[in-house]
Image 1 (spheres, one colour):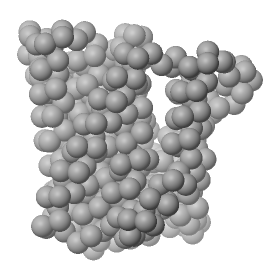
Image 2 (tube, rainbow, N blue to C red):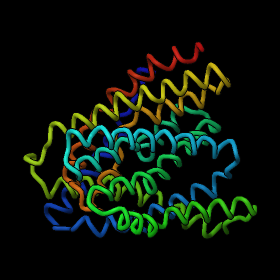
Image 3 (spheres, rainbow, N blue to C red):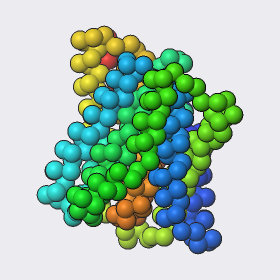
Image 4 (cartoon, rainbow, N blue to C red):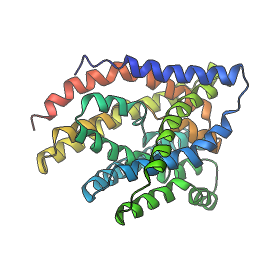
Length: 309
């Protein structure tokens, strides 16, 4: 496991970040409309397509719910602790980032390499839990960094991803099928999500200087992403392995969810709510650069040990 090469995924993501930087610095493109496009159109359609194509079952949805619960608990815990060290906007952004990770365009290519097809399906439903967190609990906590309870709830109710989830569940429950032509069209949105999601990091970085670097904020993000999450998922895996005996594929899926870098959606949500997106972009870039070095070491040592349970 330690010889897993993540450089290809890293260079691809960094290329998209660089394109975003060029677009912002030299073409003067405003990233805010793109953030709105991601939140209100591209993300919901990507989520809906993944849900309808994944054929959800109670067991798979239990995975989604478990990851959603873990993400929400970490978010709320960090939100309470960070109130003693950060201002409202930084606290809200750190709390949001605590519950999420780049499980999609960073973690998913790794899952395709390391997991068998049934394991990839399990990983996808874990990933759905992260996406659902981002646009429910995570969005609300982020909005509270700037808005009142009522305003935050109103903004939350306007998010189409919630309704995309309900629509996907209804279609699956009724055993309906999305027409093949529509499914093929929806499939393109996941590529838009990947490219624009990483480009918006570069666009944000193109509008700020490194004077915006906040060492305390970055340290908090790194601590949560590369210490708290790996420990939380490791503890969950050990307990599940010892009690109900989960499969090796699900063990690896959970461990990978806990080891990926910060999510690009940290910047997307921060941009949409105008809560320090420049700080989020710097932290996301740093953790993305560190992840290819840390993930093989972490999985290489931890996975064989966990599989002995």
